[in-house]
Amino acid sequence: MQRQKPLVLDVDGTFLKTDLGLECFWNGLGRAPLETLRATAMHLRDRAGLCRELARIAPPRVDLLPLRPEMAARALEACEAGRPVVLAGGADPGLVAALASHYGFCEEGLGAEGAAAPEGGAKARALVERFGRRGFDYAGARAADRPVWREADRALLLGRQHRLAAELSAAGHPVEEIPAGWKLRDLGRALRPHQWVKNVLLLLPALAAHDFRPETLVLVLMGILAFSAAASCIYIVNDLLDLEADRLHETKCRRPFACGNVPIGAGMAAGAALALVALGVGAALGPPFLTVVLLYMALSLAYSLRLKRMRWVDIATLAALYTIRVVAGAAASGGEASFLMLVFVFPVFVTLGCVKRMTELARAETDERLPGRGYGRGDRGDLLNMAGLGVVGALVVFVAYSFSAQAEALYQTRWLLWAAAVPLAVWLVRMVWLGYRGQQDYDPIVFALRDRAGLGLIFFALSFMFYSAGLWQRWFGF
Image (cartoon, rainbow, N blue to C red):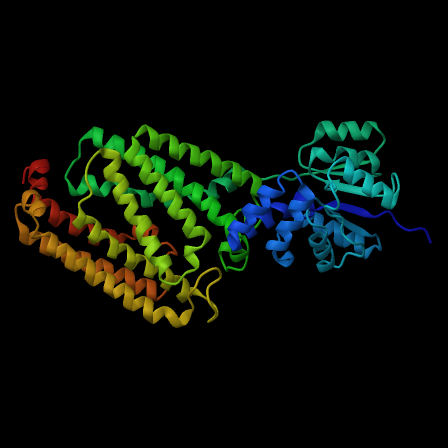
């Protein structure tokens, strides 16, 4: 009986919606960043050696890698029909073989071996040696595989490659074009624009100083633009570092990179562009603001790489990242973030960091530690106690501020500041309670800026403060 022609599937972007080499790279950065960077520098011109080293340092779980449904279905049909199915890619051969074995393909995978990775002409020669000319069908998504299609029988092309399809068809190859690609709106989701609302914290120094001049607001808005770009850049990096943890999460598994809707390479390019925007606007606003942006990005990167996995350190880091936004607001406008203001906002943000973790634990389905975090359900009590300390600390500092020289200069009626502490206290306690019960968003700042009841409490607190400062009288004549 004559053996049926095998169906050869390119791994990267064809059978998988992701790239195995980049998966190894980012997985390595998350687990062993220094070793991964060292291996990348040493094997930068040796693709096969780099693939081998990255696969050794941090091999990804092949069972979690996102498949391209239409190609997985074709592979299953081929297997059921008795056709051999071969996976071919530029990653470590052991990793490609593990992927083929996991899905029960009857042929070993073909990966990067020797001095050259099986890409383009090298891959074509390896397949011809194994199956002969026109002895296999090939499915791929990259124009670089043109030499492979020329040696194949049937050509399956993913994505818009009409010119290549016409060229192969003219050479006598049966050609099938399969729609594929990714959408810009999915990349937009990866930027998490809804998180940009957190950058309104840059307005706090101007608000506290009652500086509402148009020129101040323009400078602060430029600062918000820079921080929004920086934050989106770090969100992309964080998502790429957390690919496996996100795929194990109930809701985060739908994030664009985790589910494969956006290629890792596209995310890396977008992240680099956003970093340039953040640093460019930061430089335009002057050295002090640029320094704050660099500090924010460095601390955010450290958080993504290591600090978020460390109990309590992660909460302190989250609070510091929020506090840095307040410092940035002062640096952008040329104002000053007073020591008492920073001492007040830091425990508030510690409280909100605890709320974030309590929300995650309350929504967790098991008692195991959260993926990529150092907390389990048994820590909810300790987090609640820490949140309570943060509430008390913030309120004590707020009342102490009312006796400061700055408060005496800005506020005419000091007892109204004490009255403002009441709705502020109710808001903080409410946030802690909702977080403990898992009744809010995974990000407390985003939740707070959408929560009508909470916004009402904050409005009452600000109203007392504005009336005490005489702003209502100045603006509205009463």
